Length: 85
Image 1 (cartoon, one colour):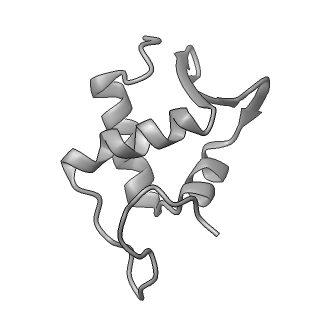
Image 2 (cartoon, rainbow, N blue to C red):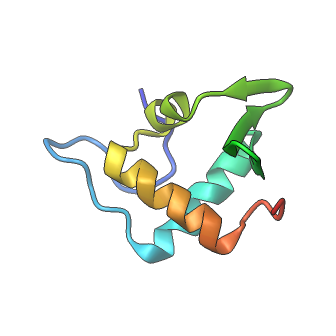
């Protein structure tokens, strides 16, 4: 089951779109959950505590599609919400 970061139901036949103003809410929920993201020579690195986490796992846990995962990466690269770049 995906983490709840939206106020509305996540049940449906199709994935709900994530609008521009919602990305900051998702990142805030990830930070609150202890998920960190930083940039190194190999790209974005996801960490939960001392453990490195694959992006596919992050997508699964937060209920993101492949396209939404790509848009999340773009948001992180453009806005640097963790302040690590």
